[in-house]
Image (cartoon, rainbow, N blue to C red):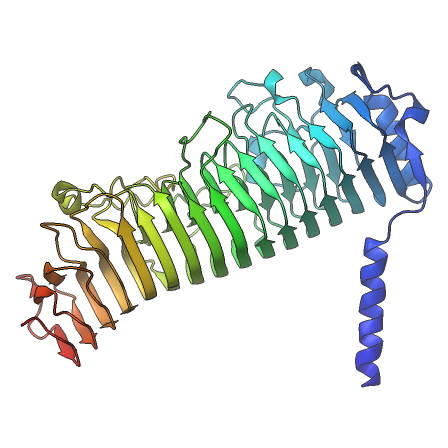
Length: 531
Protein backbone atom coordinates (compact mmCIF):
# COMPACT_ATOMS: atom_id res chain seq x y z
CA UNK A 1 0.00 0.00 0.00
CA UNK A 2 2.81 2.41 0.89
CA UNK A 3 4.36 1.85 -2.54
CA UNK A 4 1.06 2.80 -4.20
CA UNK A 5 0.75 5.96 -2.11
CA UNK A 6 4.33 6.92 -2.88
CA UNK A 7 3.80 6.32 -6.60
CA UNK A 8 0.65 8.45 -6.55
CA UNK A 9 2.46 11.22 -4.73
CA UNK A 10 5.28 11.21 -7.28
CA UNK A 11 2.83 11.23 -10.21
CA UNK A 12 0.74 14.01 -8.63
CA UNK A 13 3.83 16.10 -8.03
CA UNK A 14 4.94 15.58 -11.64
CA UNK A 15 1.50 16.58 -12.95
CA UNK A 16 1.40 19.69 -10.76
CA UNK A 17 4.89 20.67 -11.91
CA UNK A 18 3.79 20.46 -15.54
CA UNK A 19 0.67 22.53 -14.90
CA UNK A 20 2.21 25.10 -12.54
CA UNK A 21 2.13 28.62 -13.93
CA UNK A 22 5.54 30.26 -14.36
CA UNK A 23 6.13 32.87 -11.65
CA UNK A 24 7.70 35.70 -13.69
CA UNK A 25 5.75 37.93 -16.09
CA UNK A 26 7.35 39.82 -18.98
CA UNK A 27 5.27 42.51 -20.71
CA UNK A 28 5.97 42.76 -24.45
CA UNK A 29 5.51 46.55 -24.27
CA UNK A 30 8.61 46.83 -22.10
CA UNK A 31 10.69 45.79 -25.13
CA UNK A 32 8.98 48.35 -27.35
CA UNK A 33 5.99 46.41 -28.78
CA UNK A 34 3.32 48.85 -29.93
CA UNK A 35 -0.27 47.62 -29.88
CA UNK A 36 -1.55 49.70 -32.80
CA UNK A 37 -1.89 46.92 -35.38
CA UNK A 38 0.42 48.81 -37.77
CA UNK A 39 3.88 48.77 -36.21
CA UNK A 40 5.81 45.55 -36.79
CA UNK A 41 6.55 44.11 -33.34
CA UNK A 42 8.42 40.92 -34.25
CA UNK A 43 11.77 41.97 -32.76
CA UNK A 44 10.24 43.28 -29.54
CA UNK A 45 8.16 40.15 -28.99
CA UNK A 46 11.13 37.86 -29.71
CA UNK A 47 13.34 39.85 -27.36
CA UNK A 48 10.74 39.40 -24.63
CA UNK A 49 10.54 35.64 -25.25
CA UNK A 50 14.33 35.36 -25.15
CA UNK A 51 14.55 37.33 -21.88
CA UNK A 52 11.85 35.12 -20.36
CA UNK A 53 13.67 31.93 -21.37
CA UNK A 54 17.02 33.24 -20.13
CA UNK A 55 15.45 33.94 -16.74
CA UNK A 56 14.41 30.29 -16.44
CA UNK A 57 10.94 30.68 -17.85
CA UNK A 58 7.76 32.58 -17.16
CA UNK A 59 4.89 34.31 -18.93
CA UNK A 60 5.17 36.66 -21.89
CA UNK A 61 2.16 38.94 -21.50
CA UNK A 62 0.19 40.70 -24.25
CA UNK A 63 -2.11 43.39 -22.83
CA UNK A 64 -5.16 44.49 -24.83
CA UNK A 65 -4.36 45.82 -28.29
CA UNK A 66 -3.25 44.51 -31.67
CA UNK A 67 0.36 43.41 -32.14
CA UNK A 68 1.53 43.03 -35.74
CA UNK A 69 4.24 40.39 -36.10
CA UNK A 70 6.16 38.05 -38.34
CA UNK A 71 7.61 34.75 -37.11
CA UNK A 72 8.25 34.44 -33.38
CA UNK A 73 10.10 31.43 -31.98
CA UNK A 74 9.08 29.93 -28.65
CA UNK A 75 11.64 28.71 -26.11
CA UNK A 76 11.36 26.14 -23.33
CA UNK A 77 9.40 27.05 -20.18
CA UNK A 78 7.73 30.05 -21.86
CA UNK A 79 4.00 30.78 -21.83
CA UNK A 80 2.45 33.32 -24.21
CA UNK A 81 -0.57 34.91 -22.54
CA UNK A 82 -2.96 37.05 -24.57
CA UNK A 83 -5.41 38.81 -22.32
CA UNK A 84 -8.98 39.59 -23.44
CA UNK A 85 -8.83 42.23 -26.16
CA UNK A 86 -5.29 41.32 -27.21
CA UNK A 87 -4.65 40.16 -30.79
CA UNK A 88 -1.45 38.77 -32.25
CA UNK A 89 -1.85 39.68 -35.93
CA UNK A 90 0.26 38.08 -38.62
CA UNK A 91 2.15 40.34 -41.01
CA UNK A 92 0.89 40.58 -44.59
CA UNK A 93 4.45 40.45 -45.94
CA UNK A 94 5.78 36.92 -46.72
CA UNK A 95 9.32 38.20 -46.08
CA UNK A 96 8.46 38.48 -42.39
CA UNK A 97 8.22 34.67 -42.17
CA UNK A 98 11.71 33.21 -42.74
CA UNK A 99 11.79 29.44 -43.41
CA UNK A 100 12.21 27.33 -40.27
CA UNK A 101 13.99 24.07 -41.15
CA UNK A 102 13.66 21.22 -38.68
CA UNK A 103 15.73 18.05 -38.46
CA UNK A 104 12.48 16.05 -38.49
CA UNK A 105 11.80 14.79 -42.01
CA UNK A 106 8.17 14.40 -43.04
CA UNK A 107 5.98 14.79 -46.08
CA UNK A 108 5.15 18.29 -44.84
CA UNK A 109 8.60 19.29 -46.13
CA UNK A 110 6.69 19.61 -49.40
CA UNK A 111 4.33 22.14 -47.87
CA UNK A 112 5.19 25.28 -45.92
CA UNK A 113 8.23 25.86 -43.70
CA UNK A 114 6.92 29.12 -42.29
CA UNK A 115 4.73 30.00 -39.33
CA UNK A 116 3.61 32.93 -37.24
CA UNK A 117 4.36 31.00 -34.01
CA UNK A 118 7.08 28.35 -34.27
CA UNK A 119 8.98 26.07 -31.91
CA UNK A 120 11.32 23.12 -32.44
CA UNK A 121 12.52 20.66 -29.80
CA UNK A 122 11.48 22.65 -26.76
CA UNK A 123 9.44 21.69 -23.70
CA UNK A 124 6.87 23.02 -21.28
CA UNK A 125 5.41 25.74 -23.47
CA UNK A 126 1.93 27.21 -23.56
CA UNK A 127 -0.31 29.51 -25.57
CA UNK A 128 -3.19 30.76 -23.45
CA UNK A 129 -5.62 33.51 -22.61
CA UNK A 130 -8.87 35.03 -23.81
CA UNK A 131 -7.21 36.88 -26.71
CA UNK A 132 -6.92 36.16 -30.44
CA UNK A 133 -4.29 34.88 -32.84
CA UNK A 134 -5.14 36.13 -36.33
CA UNK A 135 -3.03 34.80 -39.20
CA UNK A 136 -4.13 37.60 -41.54
CA UNK A 137 -4.49 34.90 -44.21
CA UNK A 138 -6.45 37.15 -46.53
CA UNK A 139 -3.08 38.44 -47.73
CA UNK A 140 -2.06 34.92 -48.87
CA UNK A 141 -4.85 33.67 -51.12
CA UNK A 142 -2.75 31.95 -53.78
CA UNK A 143 -3.14 28.18 -54.05
CA UNK A 144 0.58 27.24 -54.10
CA UNK A 145 1.96 26.30 -50.69
CA UNK A 146 5.04 28.56 -50.90
CA UNK A 147 4.94 31.61 -48.62
CA UNK A 148 1.62 30.72 -46.96
CA UNK A 149 2.56 30.39 -43.28
CA UNK A 150 0.82 28.30 -40.65
CA UNK A 151 -0.54 30.26 -37.70
CA UNK A 152 1.07 27.80 -35.24
CA UNK A 153 3.68 25.14 -35.99
CA UNK A 154 5.35 23.17 -33.20
CA UNK A 155 7.79 20.37 -34.04
CA UNK A 156 9.12 17.62 -31.71
CA UNK A 157 8.06 19.59 -28.64
CA UNK A 158 6.99 18.17 -25.28
CA UNK A 159 4.47 19.17 -22.63
CA UNK A 160 2.44 21.71 -24.59
CA UNK A 161 -0.73 23.49 -23.57
CA UNK A 162 -2.90 25.59 -25.91
CA UNK A 163 -5.95 26.93 -24.12
CA UNK A 164 -8.76 29.47 -24.25
CA UNK A 165 -7.74 31.42 -27.35
CA UNK A 166 -9.62 32.44 -30.47
CA UNK A 167 -7.72 31.42 -33.61
CA UNK A 168 -8.72 32.74 -37.01
CA UNK A 169 -7.73 33.30 -40.64
CA UNK A 170 -4.55 31.32 -41.12
CA UNK A 171 -2.92 31.41 -44.53
CA UNK A 172 -2.50 27.61 -44.33
CA UNK A 173 -3.38 25.05 -41.65
CA UNK A 174 -4.28 26.84 -38.44
CA UNK A 175 -2.21 24.57 -36.18
CA UNK A 176 0.35 21.92 -37.05
CA UNK A 177 1.81 19.78 -34.26
CA UNK A 178 4.49 17.45 -35.67
CA UNK A 179 6.10 14.62 -33.67
CA UNK A 180 5.13 16.21 -30.35
CA UNK A 181 4.50 14.49 -27.01
CA UNK A 182 1.98 15.35 -24.31
CA UNK A 183 -0.12 18.00 -26.03
CA UNK A 184 -3.22 19.48 -24.41
CA UNK A 185 -5.61 21.62 -26.47
CA UNK A 186 -8.62 22.99 -24.62
CA UNK A 187 -11.33 25.60 -24.99
CA UNK A 188 -10.30 27.03 -28.38
CA UNK A 189 -12.57 28.85 -30.82
CA UNK A 190 -11.21 28.27 -34.32
CA UNK A 191 -12.61 29.90 -37.46
CA UNK A 192 -10.53 29.31 -40.58
CA UNK A 193 -12.17 30.33 -43.87
CA UNK A 194 -9.82 32.72 -45.64
CA UNK A 195 -7.48 30.80 -47.96
CA UNK A 196 -6.71 27.31 -49.26
CA UNK A 197 -5.86 24.32 -46.99
CA UNK A 198 -7.60 25.97 -44.05
CA UNK A 199 -7.62 23.06 -41.58
CA UNK A 200 -8.62 23.70 -37.98
CA UNK A 201 -5.93 21.55 -36.34
CA UNK A 202 -3.46 18.93 -37.63
CA UNK A 203 -2.04 16.47 -35.12
CA UNK A 204 0.78 14.74 -36.97
CA UNK A 205 2.75 11.80 -35.57
CA UNK A 206 2.08 12.97 -32.01
CA UNK A 207 1.75 10.91 -28.81
CA UNK A 208 -0.45 11.46 -25.75
CA UNK A 209 -2.80 14.21 -26.94
CA UNK A 210 -6.08 15.58 -25.58
CA UNK A 211 -8.37 17.95 -27.46
CA UNK A 212 -11.45 19.06 -25.53
CA UNK A 213 -14.15 21.71 -25.25
CA UNK A 214 -13.28 23.38 -28.57
CA UNK A 215 -15.32 24.80 -31.45
CA UNK A 216 -13.79 24.27 -34.90
CA UNK A 217 -15.23 25.82 -38.07
CA UNK A 218 -12.92 25.40 -41.05
CA UNK A 219 -12.92 25.35 -44.82
CA UNK A 220 -10.70 22.27 -45.02
CA UNK A 221 -10.61 19.44 -42.44
CA UNK A 222 -11.61 20.54 -38.94
CA UNK A 223 -9.69 18.03 -36.81
CA UNK A 224 -7.18 16.06 -38.86
CA UNK A 225 -4.85 13.42 -37.47
CA UNK A 226 -1.91 12.66 -39.76
CA UNK A 227 1.28 10.64 -39.77
CA UNK A 228 3.40 12.28 -42.45
CA UNK A 229 6.52 10.56 -41.14
CA UNK A 230 7.47 7.14 -39.76
CA UNK A 231 5.95 7.90 -36.35
CA UNK A 232 2.43 6.88 -35.39
CA UNK A 233 -0.20 9.31 -34.26
CA UNK A 234 -0.88 7.53 -30.99
CA UNK A 235 -2.92 7.85 -27.79
CA UNK A 236 -5.20 10.73 -28.81
CA UNK A 237 -8.57 11.67 -27.29
CA UNK A 238 -10.97 14.24 -28.72
CA UNK A 239 -14.04 15.06 -26.64
CA UNK A 240 -16.74 17.66 -26.05
CA UNK A 241 -16.11 19.54 -29.30
CA UNK A 242 -18.29 21.12 -32.01
CA UNK A 243 -16.94 20.59 -35.55
CA UNK A 244 -17.87 22.11 -38.92
CA UNK A 245 -16.00 21.69 -42.19
CA UNK A 246 -16.50 22.00 -45.93
CA UNK A 247 -14.32 18.86 -46.19
CA UNK A 248 -14.01 16.34 -43.33
CA UNK A 249 -14.99 17.19 -39.79
CA UNK A 250 -12.93 14.44 -38.10
CA UNK A 251 -10.32 12.69 -40.21
CA UNK A 252 -7.49 10.20 -39.83
CA UNK A 253 -5.33 10.67 -42.95
CA UNK A 254 -4.81 11.28 -45.72
CA UNK A 255 -1.13 10.71 -44.93
CA UNK A 256 -0.79 7.49 -42.92
CA UNK A 257 2.88 6.50 -43.18
CA UNK A 258 3.38 6.04 -39.44
CA UNK A 259 -0.18 4.89 -38.71
CA UNK A 260 -2.81 5.64 -36.08
CA UNK A 261 -3.15 3.79 -32.77
CA UNK A 262 -5.43 4.22 -29.78
CA UNK A 263 -7.62 7.10 -30.94
CA UNK A 264 -10.91 8.12 -29.26
CA UNK A 265 -13.56 10.60 -30.45
CA UNK A 266 -16.48 11.08 -28.05
CA UNK A 267 -19.29 13.42 -27.06
CA UNK A 268 -19.05 15.68 -30.09
CA UNK A 269 -21.37 17.51 -32.48
CA UNK A 270 -20.64 17.66 -36.21
CA UNK A 271 -22.48 20.20 -38.36
CA UNK A 272 -22.55 21.39 -41.92
CA UNK A 273 -20.90 24.85 -41.96
CA UNK A 274 -23.39 27.60 -41.15
CA UNK A 275 -21.35 30.79 -41.45
CA UNK A 276 -19.27 30.37 -44.62
CA UNK A 277 -19.18 29.35 -48.27
CA UNK A 278 -16.66 26.86 -49.51
CA UNK A 279 -13.25 27.66 -50.93
CA UNK A 280 -12.57 23.92 -51.26
CA UNK A 281 -14.80 20.90 -50.75
CA UNK A 282 -18.60 21.19 -50.58
CA UNK A 283 -20.88 23.71 -48.95
CA UNK A 284 -22.40 21.00 -46.74
CA UNK A 285 -19.10 19.21 -46.09
CA UNK A 286 -17.66 15.99 -47.52
CA UNK A 287 -17.93 13.68 -44.52
CA UNK A 288 -18.44 13.75 -40.79
CA UNK A 289 -16.01 10.96 -39.87
CA UNK A 290 -13.31 9.76 -42.29
CA UNK A 291 -10.83 7.05 -41.30
CA UNK A 292 -8.23 6.50 -44.01
CA UNK A 293 -5.03 4.49 -44.40
CA UNK A 294 -3.54 4.71 -47.89
CA UNK A 295 0.22 5.29 -47.41
CA UNK A 296 1.08 2.23 -45.34
CA UNK A 297 1.00 2.26 -41.56
CA UNK A 298 -1.32 0.50 -39.11
CA UNK A 299 -4.69 2.04 -38.28
CA UNK A 300 -5.95 0.23 -35.20
CA UNK A 301 -7.79 0.55 -31.91
CA UNK A 302 -10.12 3.41 -32.85
CA UNK A 303 -13.21 4.19 -30.75
CA UNK A 304 -15.88 6.70 -31.79
CA UNK A 305 -19.04 7.18 -29.74
CA UNK A 306 -21.76 9.64 -28.76
CA UNK A 307 -21.66 11.86 -31.83
CA UNK A 308 -24.54 13.92 -33.26
CA UNK A 309 -24.22 14.69 -37.00
CA UNK A 310 -26.33 17.11 -38.99
CA UNK A 311 -26.34 18.11 -42.64
CA UNK A 312 -23.05 16.71 -43.99
CA UNK A 313 -22.86 14.64 -47.19
CA UNK A 314 -21.54 11.34 -45.78
CA UNK A 315 -21.69 10.31 -42.11
CA UNK A 316 -19.00 7.58 -42.20
CA UNK A 317 -16.17 6.84 -44.64
CA UNK A 318 -13.67 4.08 -43.84
CA UNK A 319 -10.95 3.31 -46.38
CA UNK A 320 -7.90 1.09 -46.68
CA UNK A 321 -6.17 1.97 -49.97
CA UNK A 322 -2.78 1.83 -51.61
CA UNK A 323 -1.67 5.26 -52.75
CA UNK A 324 1.72 4.20 -51.31
CA UNK A 325 3.32 7.64 -51.23
CA UNK A 326 6.74 7.79 -49.49
CA UNK A 327 7.07 10.51 -46.89
CA UNK A 328 10.55 11.53 -48.06
CA UNK A 329 11.85 12.21 -51.54
CA UNK A 330 13.16 9.01 -53.14
CA UNK A 331 12.14 7.09 -50.02
CA UNK A 332 10.96 3.47 -50.22
CA UNK A 333 7.41 2.89 -51.38
CA UNK A 334 5.39 1.78 -48.34
CA UNK A 335 3.65 -1.57 -48.23
CA UNK A 336 -0.13 -1.67 -47.93
CA UNK A 337 -1.07 -0.82 -44.37
CA UNK A 338 -3.61 -2.42 -42.06
CA UNK A 339 -7.01 -1.22 -40.83
CA UNK A 340 -8.46 -3.05 -37.85
CA UNK A 341 -10.24 -2.90 -34.50
CA UNK A 342 -12.57 0.06 -35.01
CA UNK A 343 -15.75 0.57 -32.97
CA UNK A 344 -18.30 3.25 -33.91
CA UNK A 345 -21.34 3.48 -31.66
CA UNK A 346 -24.18 5.71 -30.51
CA UNK A 347 -24.23 7.96 -33.57
CA UNK A 348 -27.25 10.01 -34.68
CA UNK A 349 -26.99 11.53 -38.18
CA UNK A 350 -29.74 13.59 -39.82
CA UNK A 351 -30.02 15.43 -43.12
CA UNK A 352 -27.06 13.68 -44.75
CA UNK A 353 -26.56 13.27 -48.50
CA UNK A 354 -27.41 10.60 -51.07
CA UNK A 355 -24.06 8.82 -51.41
CA UNK A 356 -24.19 6.52 -48.37
CA UNK A 357 -21.54 5.26 -45.95
CA UNK A 358 -18.73 2.97 -47.11
CA UNK A 359 -16.23 0.58 -45.55
CA UNK A 360 -13.77 -0.60 -48.19
CA UNK A 361 -10.49 -2.47 -48.27
CA UNK A 362 -8.63 -4.07 -51.15
CA UNK A 363 -9.01 -7.55 -52.69
CA UNK A 364 -5.98 -8.96 -50.84
CA UNK A 365 -5.97 -6.55 -47.89
CA UNK A 366 -9.12 -6.58 -45.79
CA UNK A 367 -10.44 -4.02 -43.35
CA UNK A 368 -10.74 -6.08 -40.17
CA UNK A 369 -12.88 -6.09 -37.03
CA UNK A 370 -15.19 -3.11 -37.48
CA UNK A 371 -18.23 -2.72 -35.23
CA UNK A 372 -21.14 -0.37 -35.94
CA UNK A 373 -23.55 -0.32 -33.01
CA UNK A 374 -26.61 1.74 -32.07
CA UNK A 375 -26.60 4.03 -35.08
CA UNK A 376 -29.50 6.14 -36.37
CA UNK A 377 -28.72 7.39 -39.88
CA UNK A 378 -30.97 9.57 -42.02
CA UNK A 379 -30.12 10.05 -45.71
CA UNK A 380 -31.36 12.29 -48.50
CA UNK A 381 -32.51 9.31 -50.57
CA UNK A 382 -33.73 9.52 -54.14
CA UNK A 383 -31.48 6.70 -55.36
CA UNK A 384 -32.40 4.90 -58.56
CA UNK A 385 -32.12 1.37 -59.92
CA UNK A 386 -29.31 2.54 -62.21
CA UNK A 387 -27.23 3.51 -59.16
CA UNK A 388 -27.89 0.12 -57.61
CA UNK A 389 -26.60 -1.73 -60.66
CA UNK A 390 -23.54 0.40 -61.38
CA UNK A 391 -20.19 -1.34 -60.72
CA UNK A 392 -18.12 0.14 -57.90
CA UNK A 393 -14.48 0.58 -59.06
CA UNK A 394 -11.64 -0.48 -56.79
CA UNK A 395 -9.55 2.71 -57.24
CA UNK A 396 -6.79 1.26 -55.05
CA UNK A 397 -4.30 4.10 -55.59
CA UNK A 398 -6.75 7.01 -55.70
CA UNK A 399 -6.89 9.89 -53.26
CA UNK A 400 -9.40 8.80 -50.61
CA UNK A 401 -12.53 10.81 -50.09
CA UNK A 402 -16.13 9.94 -49.42
CA UNK A 403 -17.38 10.59 -52.96
CA UNK A 404 -14.60 8.63 -54.68
CA UNK A 405 -16.93 5.81 -55.80
CA UNK A 406 -19.87 8.02 -56.74
CA UNK A 407 -23.35 7.05 -55.61
CA UNK A 408 -23.18 3.63 -53.98
CA UNK A 409 -25.48 0.64 -54.60
CA UNK A 410 -26.59 0.93 -50.98
CA UNK A 411 -28.18 4.12 -49.70
CA UNK A 412 -27.01 3.41 -46.13
CA UNK A 413 -23.95 1.11 -45.83
CA UNK A 414 -21.69 -0.40 -48.50
CA UNK A 415 -18.95 -2.81 -47.33
CA UNK A 416 -16.33 -4.51 -49.51
CA UNK A 417 -13.21 -6.54 -48.67
CA UNK A 418 -13.97 -6.63 -44.95
CA UNK A 419 -13.37 -9.38 -42.40
CA UNK A 420 -15.08 -9.29 -39.01
CA UNK A 421 -17.83 -6.71 -39.63
CA UNK A 422 -20.51 -6.42 -36.96
CA UNK A 423 -23.57 -4.24 -37.53
CA UNK A 424 -25.83 -4.13 -34.48
CA UNK A 425 -28.98 -2.15 -33.74
CA UNK A 426 -28.72 0.17 -36.73
CA UNK A 427 -31.76 2.14 -37.87
CA UNK A 428 -31.66 3.89 -41.25
CA UNK A 429 -34.11 6.17 -43.02
CA UNK A 430 -34.42 8.29 -46.17
CA UNK A 431 -36.12 11.64 -46.68
CA UNK A 432 -37.10 10.61 -50.23
CA UNK A 433 -37.96 7.16 -51.49
CA UNK A 434 -34.82 5.26 -52.47
CA UNK A 435 -34.98 1.97 -54.39
CA UNK A 436 -31.42 0.91 -53.62
CA UNK A 437 -30.51 -1.71 -51.05
CA UNK A 438 -30.07 -0.55 -47.46
CA UNK A 439 -27.00 -2.75 -46.97
CA UNK A 440 -24.63 -4.21 -49.57
CA UNK A 441 -21.77 -6.51 -48.59
CA UNK A 442 -19.29 -7.64 -51.24
CA UNK A 443 -16.43 -10.01 -50.37
CA UNK A 444 -17.12 -9.86 -46.65
CA UNK A 445 -16.17 -12.62 -44.21
CA UNK A 446 -17.26 -13.19 -40.62
CA UNK A 447 -20.24 -10.85 -40.83
CA UNK A 448 -22.91 -10.30 -38.20
CA UNK A 449 -25.97 -8.15 -38.85
CA UNK A 450 -28.29 -7.77 -35.88
CA UNK A 451 -31.50 -5.74 -35.51
CA UNK A 452 -31.12 -3.80 -38.76
CA UNK A 453 -34.15 -1.57 -39.32
CA UNK A 454 -34.63 -0.11 -42.80
CA UNK A 455 -37.56 1.55 -44.63
CA UNK A 456 -39.07 0.05 -47.74
CA UNK A 457 -39.58 2.20 -50.83
CA UNK A 458 -42.12 1.31 -53.54
CA UNK A 459 -40.57 -1.08 -56.07
CA UNK A 460 -37.46 -1.25 -53.91
CA UNK A 461 -34.74 -3.85 -54.34
CA UNK A 462 -33.91 -6.39 -51.68
CA UNK A 463 -33.20 -4.78 -48.33
CA UNK A 464 -29.87 -6.64 -48.11
CA UNK A 465 -27.59 -7.82 -50.92
CA UNK A 466 -24.68 -10.16 -50.23
CA UNK A 467 -22.11 -11.09 -52.87
CA UNK A 468 -19.31 -13.52 -52.00
CA UNK A 469 -20.17 -13.34 -48.31
CA UNK A 470 -19.06 -16.18 -46.05
CA UNK A 471 -19.70 -17.01 -42.39
CA UNK A 472 -22.53 -14.53 -41.90
CA UNK A 473 -25.24 -14.31 -39.28
CA UNK A 474 -28.32 -12.13 -39.90
CA UNK A 475 -30.50 -11.99 -36.79
CA UNK A 476 -33.36 -10.14 -35.14
CA UNK A 477 -34.18 -7.95 -38.15
CA UNK A 478 -37.68 -6.59 -38.70
CA UNK A 479 -39.09 -5.04 -41.86
CA UNK A 480 -40.69 -1.59 -41.83
CA UNK A 481 -43.22 -2.16 -44.61
CA UNK A 482 -44.01 -4.63 -47.32
CA UNK A 483 -41.16 -5.63 -49.59
CA UNK A 484 -40.84 -8.16 -52.37
CA UNK A 485 -37.49 -9.57 -51.21
CA UNK A 486 -35.46 -9.41 -48.01
CA UNK A 487 -32.07 -10.74 -49.15
CA UNK A 488 -30.36 -11.24 -52.50
CA UNK A 489 -27.45 -13.70 -52.29
CA UNK A 490 -24.89 -13.86 -55.11
CA UNK A 491 -21.35 -15.06 -55.72
CA UNK A 492 -19.50 -18.37 -55.96
CA UNK A 493 -17.77 -17.72 -52.62
CA UNK A 494 -20.98 -17.22 -50.66
CA UNK A 495 -21.34 -19.83 -47.93
CA UNK A 496 -22.59 -20.41 -44.40
CA UNK A 497 -25.06 -17.51 -44.39
CA UNK A 498 -27.53 -17.98 -41.52
CA UNK A 499 -30.83 -16.17 -40.95
CA UNK A 500 -31.86 -16.44 -37.30
CA UNK A 501 -34.89 -15.07 -35.44
CA UNK A 502 -35.88 -12.49 -38.07
CA UNK A 503 -39.44 -11.26 -38.64
CA UNK A 504 -39.80 -11.54 -42.42
CA UNK A 505 -43.59 -11.69 -42.57
CA UNK A 506 -43.72 -8.40 -44.53
CA UNK A 507 -41.56 -9.83 -47.33
CA UNK A 508 -43.06 -11.75 -50.23
CA UNK A 509 -39.85 -13.80 -50.39
CA UNK A 510 -37.09 -14.15 -47.85
CA UNK A 511 -34.00 -15.01 -49.93
CA UNK A 512 -33.22 -15.14 -53.63
CA UNK A 513 -30.00 -16.81 -54.78
CA UNK A 514 -28.22 -15.81 -57.96
CA UNK A 515 -27.26 -18.41 -60.54
CA UNK A 516 -23.65 -18.48 -59.30
CA UNK A 517 -24.48 -18.90 -55.61
CA UNK A 518 -23.73 -22.45 -54.41
CA UNK A 519 -26.60 -24.69 -53.40
CA UNK A 520 -26.97 -24.62 -49.64
CA UNK A 521 -25.15 -21.31 -49.25
CA UNK A 522 -27.75 -20.18 -46.71
CA UNK A 523 -29.98 -21.66 -44.07
CA UNK A 524 -32.64 -20.34 -41.70
CA UNK A 525 -33.80 -21.06 -38.16
CA UNK A 526 -36.35 -19.48 -35.84
CA UNK A 527 -37.59 -16.92 -38.38
CA UNK A 528 -41.14 -15.70 -38.98
CA UNK A 529 -41.23 -16.35 -42.71
CA UNK A 530 -43.45 -14.97 -45.50
CA UNK A 531 -46.83 -16.62 -45.72
